[in-house]
Length: 344
Image 1: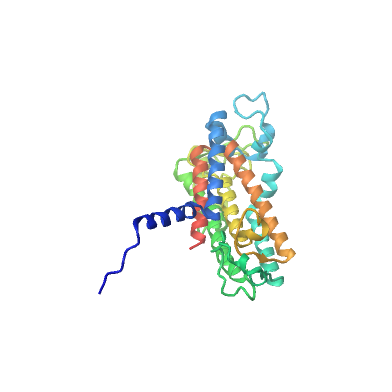
Image 2: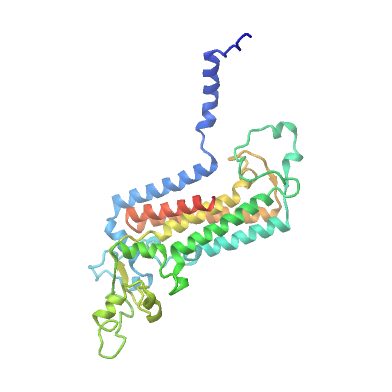
């Protein structure tokens, strides 16, 4: 039997050369992650060059309501005058960032409702053959086994699972104190405490730490101040947690940037929400199977795009004005980790 002839070496080289541009092209997901990472790096670099890391770390620790007491006469504090977005009291921070996952949750339910009540159709069945032969860029965003009934139904199922996992991740990382005495503080709070942070009373607060009893010292003396640094059930029951309500703030330790985490966490989830609709929403920028979505679905999707834009802007502001470089890096890392874990 005669052996099969091998293709010429030049032919193999041409095939590899022709395939190399597509193999080097990043997927939309990776492009978006790279864009967020570049934003964080540029903002952090600018803050290192223009502002002392000590100043940015101090801004992130000081409670927002105590900023009303910062004046030019108080030279001991490095923030007598703040840019608008370096002030925690700015509208976007108070209305959007502080409630960012609530906004994302509302948008997710709006998207789910419009997809179920106003089901779209895939344009691949109504377009010409030449258009269906186009190689898609957004091709693996969702399964297509049920595309004739509702092309977004499989995507919605996967998105619901991702939303539940992302919500649990957000909760345990930042909000686990809601469980009170059973689970104790959140993961980020434990990192802050175990890395050596201490709670410091503020001398510029509107209502400085006051004695709990007549004639007593702060929180009942040295033992009371020490109780502010504990993580046990007594913190929640006795009200001696370092919450910043009376101007106290954390000094030292590693304070994971919650803003950096939330903005990355929200942006990546919202990007997953709109991923299969990118060729429909932005046909010039993305190629792939277009979905003839209802106007209501498009409105919600464009709302998600707007929220991604706000998250990107506040991520940039966080990296410009708050936290140390390592704290911002860890916040970004936790946000990226949540995106990876919620996709498992």
